[in-house]
Image (tube, rainbow, N blue to C red):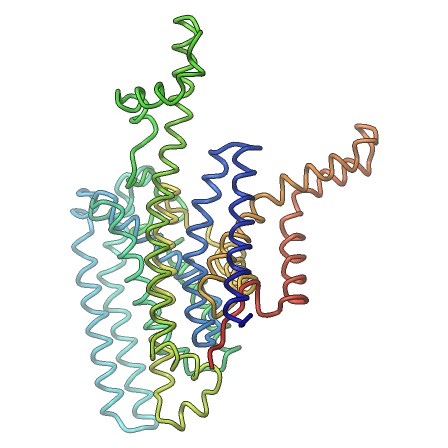
Length: 458
């Protein structure tokens, strides 16, 4: 059996096991819980694909995933929330002159950098241009921001968005992340891999700090809630005739034999439960379509001449340079593409949550956990990244209840107030981190290239 056939067989088995695990959760816990896990598994798989494009294709060690996901999240706010007319009237017009000054400063600085000779004259000239531009922009920006944030800060205090359907924010989130990746890549991609990691992590923290503190744009830590949804709301479904009729027809055997009052109560409860499941299924369908699209495009890119060139650059940059390949330009391309995919996933996550909370973005969830998905799944293999997204998020969610069950079982023979029993039950919450470390160690020991390793074609 060839390596490709072995990987394909292993993929079918592992995805099958993953499907069985989700079914077990549905039957043993609830289908609502199972669908909730699937939703976030799909988003995690898309993020893992974005990281795999950067690391698996080109060997770029980006640990600033959190920042690009947050840029996708803010796209959900700027696209879907209605504009706040009072805020625009109070200070919105002051933002544009400040933006114009910033753009003019950049243009003049670039022109001066090209024209001035190397040495003290260039350094002094650039410092003067940037300094004058900074203070000129602040002269317009600060009064405008103060006016905007003073408009009903308990409810708004920001400019709002465009009032468009939130599904458009998925594409906009990708554009935001790609734009940021272009700027970051132009600055940092010339660095060595370890310095690139430090730079991207620092830049992602800067992005989060800006989102937390620029209340005029994002409401900061006051959060933006009540975002529009691309699917029906549960309460609206419960009040529609067609949905109630559908639930009644699907649960005829449960309702038969009940008196009128009991039947009405039971039907109402089934409608409430069914509405939640229906909405989750709608999200699953939307997210699955996006995942299939990203996976298909990623596979096409990987198997194209461009993909073969990227892997050649990854494996030996010196040889690729000697053959005339523009390594820095290709790295910038793949860095932008991977970041755009992460931005799309970040916008999808904000859509699912229905709110934008900058304080929840942390490296553990949005950077290092995604890296574990790629490493465990198999870097360089798109299907491995998807598998890693499903597996790691499933374990991340189920490790804590499974750990609590395990501790309760182990200590069942001890007294209720036994110190050891209480300690073990309190420690069950830490099973997530323990389980993640254990999985990573086992995979690195027995399958160092991941569960679905990259197939090398010669």
